[in-house]
Length: 233
Image 1: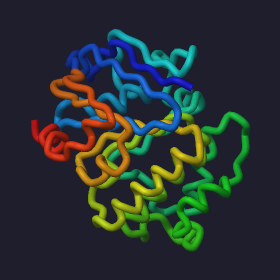
Image 2: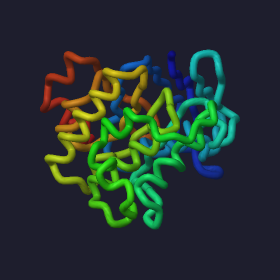
Image 3: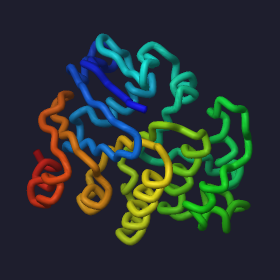
């Protein structure tokens, strides 16, 4: 499996935000997008999911082009999105939230995969609890678990560490690494938390003013000061 974004230009109405953005990912990879606020990172995620106006470029999984598809079709093609703020259903139980996540499966299955419970045992213990009564860290786990219930090939995560205690951020990093190790999932991660970046990233890209400014691999990820500097450019 290969996920590829080619020369993508997109924005809101007549305002262009993304300018010739290009990236690619293979399975079992966590690619992190760095950059300060307002540089187009979230717009990139929303554009991949079909929520922004694309004026040029392509989004593809293998030979399947997703560029002009609607959001639900993109989800069924294998892309799951966990936005900032999690957006779980607060008045549904944990289990009901997860069942909603199965609706993007192409095989029609509505059972919650056992591996999802194994990745997030706290959710198994609280499956009858209303989502809105969970802690922030537990809600983030629920949002990711719900995305995984759709059996995606690509997982888009936008600032998953936001508002979460440091020990839970470390737990989230361990879970992401475990998922990527045990499945063929690829993760595109927008993140500002340096610890989570250093813990999980396979590679990184730096975005500034809607363009990819810099790309770095595993060796550069060992330079904590350099990576930290990219978060404040």
